[in-house]
Length: 193
Image 1 (cartoon, helix red, strand yellow):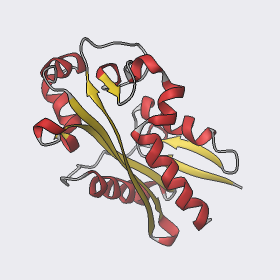
Image 2: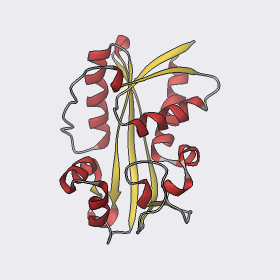
Image 3: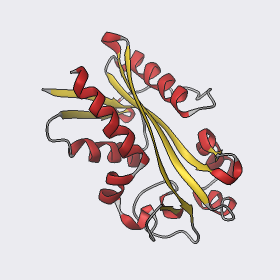
Image 4: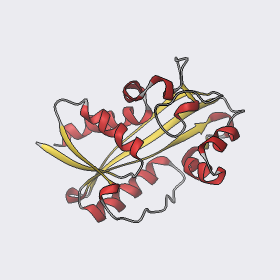
């Protein structure tokens, strides 16, 4: 049976990453759509933690699509700065104007992690499946690598001497915070279907 899922994002890198992970699951088949397939106004992210924002977005988009809706809220968290920018990662980039300027602002910071709260909302059951995961690492400069998106060129995962942008998408899909959260969510989904 093929499960149709709307990935609640217009970020092509994120949608491609989710699809790449789901394509590795041989026992479940998914038809993936993104918000680019719909004309829906993006909601605010009013909460101060990843999971509440992810739940909020999943329910919001499912009301409009009437489909299984996969949403995540993720961001870069720098431990020395009280997990800044955290849920405000997107705001930091907007405030700085470009990723390059945001990289410069983060240059003096080292220990960090990516956090991902992943939510699948099932409208017909009014139920949620959730999973949250982290990937530990450090911020490194100058930026390196051409693969990936967002902060991948300055994030070096723990135990590696290359950035995510150097390691590449297929490798990132095995170790990333989003991959871990998505795989955990799918394990819970298997029990429910």
